[in-house]
Image 1 (cartoon, rainbow, N blue to C red):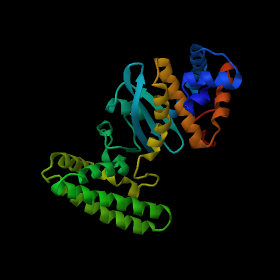
Image 2 (cartoon, one colour):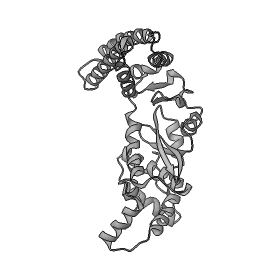
Image 3 (cartoon, rainbow, N blue to C red):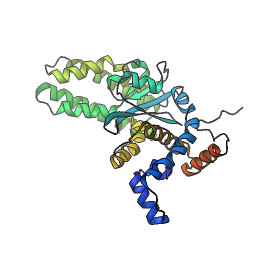
Image 4 (cartoon, rainbow, N blue to C red):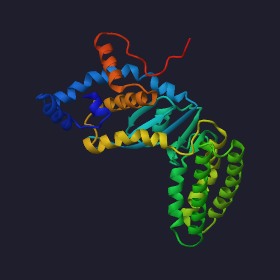
Length: 303
């Protein structure tokens, strides 16, 4: 039931129907919900170390999406490193919530959108998502006059960035060619942003001024290994929970929130590490029931 709810996004009612149709079990909705409580307890210990490991990672991608607990609007946050993911539900979508996820003293590189909640991270330690920026530039390009022309120029530069990025990733461009192109592109982008910051269109000016303040965060991926120009890792991690939210309409209690956090963390981390989710859940539950230590989610360093 945990696997079907956490990985395959079945609601409690769908689980009830599946158990009836496949296993001929008559189980009430409350029983299905209560059966998830021991799992949440079993996973509580094994996910404790995951936030710490993610906060210490050299590169972390962060994102958030809406969540509902009954009628309360909340937010599901995710932080993704190379080998672990951690999910956290918060009542707020602000700087304090972001800091609660990755830590106030986060010292790695944070990949994110241009949202102000991440503004406490220094630009030199951020990588703004160019996929989000392309959408910003597209909106600018649809405006009239010089503001639209500036948007079209920035859009073309962003599209060119991805062409060269993928060619370099595919081994069709050398490291030196890649860096030379990005150096030239950076100059062109910053010149265009400077002009856009005084183009006479308030929305375009605001966006360009903001990007000039964050310009270091546009190019971190060029010189820092392991950093991508997009925030796709975090966005992919949220797709499953978003589907589950649309099917089940969120949670009804704090207990449900904790289950979502823990189960999502385990499922995503197991997938990243190439581990079988069902086998891991079984081991964790057996360890909990028989008083043993569950298998760790965070890899244990070789001695």
